[in-house]
Length: 336
Image (cartoon, rainbow, N blue to C red):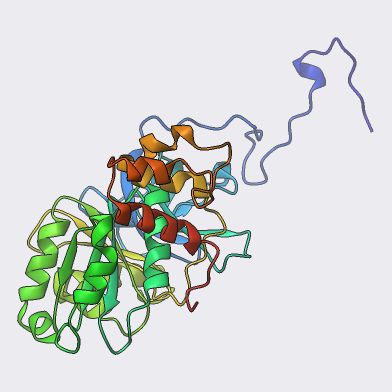
């Protein structure tokens, strides 16, 4: 092997020519200051459909990004063919800083987190009041993920024609979470979509829920079939097929300025990536009371200062109960 001494000049350095030309390869990466801005709408096996101005552009991730992956909702910089025409391909060269990040793991023992959506303002947790029965533990886990990721939660309760929402509202009333109650008839005539849309205007909202709760029906009511068909057609340009519930998809909200991110139905919502110490930030009325807590306090032990804080009237006791329930959620499985 040839070794170079301390005093070498450029004639001593061998440059490896490109097989497709005579320009030598380099490790210097372009900065792409003139790259176009876009938003990732969906990801399908290495192909990303991005909104660039008013066009849907199919792109791939540039090699210089390494292992960093772009997800639905990411703001990205693109170069290459940005026409959006069939069989064209752009390149994502930069992923901008994220304002929020919704993540989950397969279960509480899984060390690998899955990023669901980036830069969403709100998480709409869709649950049926009956058929299937509500799963409070799953709702709690979604709430913890929302608080941890910087998203504001919205509780959407469907099928109120089969069961009243009273017990569920009582359970989550202390958390002061905005909510919408809908019925099957209201979903059919559009009244439910109008009430939900009022909470989505001007925001990027990710929808989560397990199978059978009516999430897809609600998303279809919020986004006209024409817009879904257009997005599906663009995705088909990749040659990988139309969007299905196996991948997230960002859709423009109808009748308002906002985005709906339809996510695949979830069976579980693992929280292995969540640091329990951050959950308290969602309870500003309690957070001030933690100053007297012992180091590494779990907020559910005899020496926790929050008990005295609540007893002195600084916060409602139901708020402390809600905090401890959410913290305990990380140690429980949804079916418990």
